[in-house]
Image (cartoon, rainbow, N blue to C red):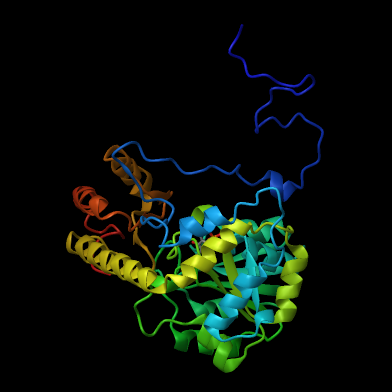
Length: 384
Ligand code: PMP
């Protein structure tokens, strides 16, 4: 007996870097780094790397999932009950709502539906890692517009980056991974500067955590101004704590949503996810309490980090950003050794999710000890 894994005859042992096989993968796809899942925390440690919610599911959610147990049946392809419920909650026509397996699925659908080879997809950078990847997978060209000094979207520069080839613009508020929001005023001005045939996708994955009253609100944009080229995206993964079930939604013009549906993989939203989302919407009061707890914890963490000398940008999601620059990977290692898995972006900075209360003291202690070793002129130092 050997411990070698069993392989069907004819399947070679090559790894993902083996280029000797004759299959022609699209060159832009072959050039993408293979997906690597983040590390899991050891016992006693904390995983603060994926902006997950530290709380158990909201009241009624587990029971609803258990009740939806017809695993031999396909789900309702349109998640009609959830669409109706979301339409009611935001007072929009049900045809203006689309549900999919996570808001990242809807991002993919919208980019695929609008942008192909020769087209451009504009977004701020640094922002959500999936953006460049989604553009490349659809065959389009990603166009990255640098954030401002204080890690915010530079909307005038994004509007100026629009060309006749631009098909979609992704605006992330609050911005993952840096934290600041886009204001309603900035967004309104941006709308007037962008041609009406360019789709503006407002990614509001962290909307529920926002406490800044000046922040853009996708539902207000859609409701009062009726901009047909704006699509607002939200998710049950973050504030509602359903990341593992994969469910998110978009609100926007039915014609654009029909195009998104045409690109989607059918039947991806499970009945369990739909029931969990419905039950979560019923638990509004408990949701608000949790969101309040996390937002308060976030403000406390950001203030304490600034007090120790870190230059932390405005934090409006469930995470904070340390602009650690060239020292990013070393600092991530220091957190790792202290039992905290954070999300480093080499050469740029690291994002720390606001997680369990028990993790807060550890985060602050490690952050305080590493900032002392940074040179005075380091971009991560000084008050934001
Ligand atoms: N948008 C942003 C900005 C995100 O950070 C994430 C998740 N990290 C998503 C979209 C996707 O979330 P989901 O697919 O879980 O709804």
